[in-house]
Length: 332
Image (cartoon, rainbow, N blue to C red; front, side):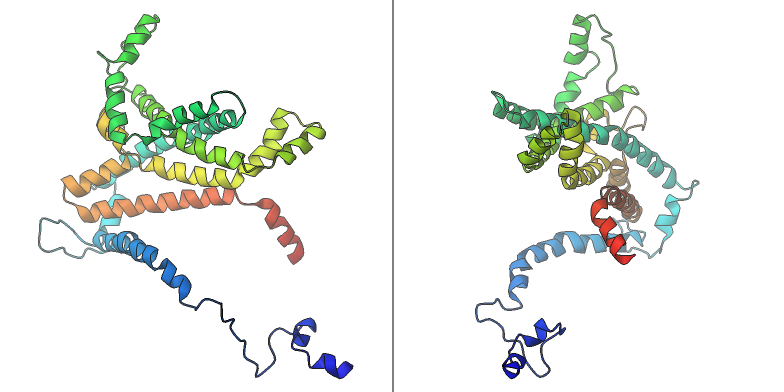
């Protein structure tokens, strides 16, 4: 009896052995895919990703290390000079660049909290059952399908100081009707942030709504039975259930806000003065108008580093603390 057990094929695994017996070979199932099969399925995406993302990104690094004027046939190698010039207050590139980074920071700080909270409120409302909620979902998402040029031209007319409908109806209501919404501060920032929130909140609201519908109704019922109120159910059931989606929405919104270009370019033209000239506007002007592609590439990578640091901070803030604690206990 004992001899029969000793020669069974699965005997080493049951005895806690770490691998197959010496000299034995694992036999592949005849229906198992070949090792190259996953790569063949991924090949079309990898070709497009490498051609249109990795290759331009690598070429951008190469350009940032040269004095690259595409109107000249030669591009001298300058090493890290383009990056050093951005940190030199006396250079012609550093001051305007950091001024544009400040404008980008102001827009991001003002718009991101609104683009996280307002769409969440809209999603909570649309997740409730009431007549006409499908119509409201379409209404809130409709502006997002319009292009930035359409949105900007439309609101440039509505916010015009003299002929705009906004000032007209403010006057009808007895409120100040001469506000220069696009040519004075802080009205210009209020206009840009307000238009952006109105335009893009539908996208975040749809993502929130999909995540809300994945939260089990049994959790809410259990919380009710335990005596939890509406705020406690939102805090202890809804927010934990939305944590992965909140992390994605936060990172995506920060990146999109930091890359704001069209609204500022078409509505305020970077003004008044240069106060709403964002980093992307500055990079485009440096590379395409001043022909300093090397400096523009260095600005782009500096902005990328800042966004990567912010994304890492968001990932750390939204990490699953409950999943980390047990591992620490096991190690201790």
